[in-house]
Image 1 (tube, rainbow, N blue to C red):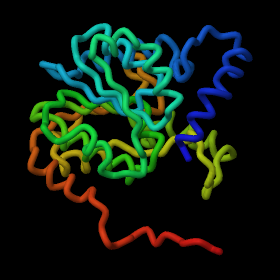
Image 2: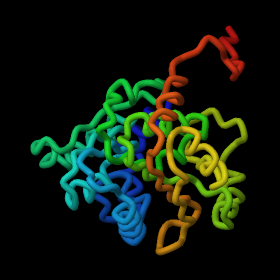
Image 3: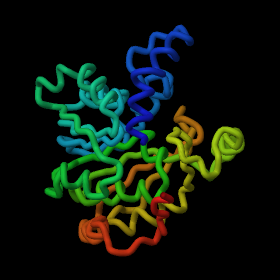
Image 4: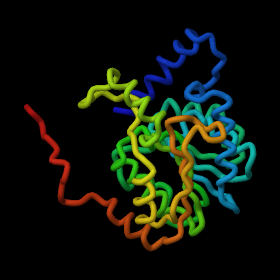
Length: 264
């Protein structure tokens, strides 16, 4: 459902939104962060990226808002993943030169396939950085955990996860939650872009359980970073714990969610 939502946004909503705003956005998704925020986020990425950095996996790359500076300002090879065919098409058109140079490859990912990312990317532990900017906040934490475990299982020892989450522990996060009370139903079944809120305590407890060191966490708007977001950098230090967690990604016989079957 989210694939359909974002495909529709790219092809139908974005052109009208750009025209109504009289804006010069060339690519969908760029409108979700102004120039100052993009620059501040890129500085944070630069300050926390690992060395060496030859191989990067980017989750939720969209049309390449952060893929482009990553390719322009480093020599890394990037494997970019997104659920939207329309976003991937934009990314490939925007970054055709880097594709021709064999520095970028884009893949569509199935959000419902827990093992899909590791199956496609492999577990050779040759990835230096996993980048996930403004994507994990779009899913509940149980779903985001699948990608955190996958990142830990593919990163080399010393490799880093750089990601953002919706900051439920900040004044700005709480203000946004209150603002959105009338925008989202508690049982909203339609795809939407509401944030799924966490706080730093949850991340500080979970990440070491799946192979990362204690994370470095920055609350916005420090140094110009966006309010209502947590910027999280974490380094893999225990591959054995990561592999143990990754083994739990396989479908199991139990179902703790008590899914409701067809009503027909």
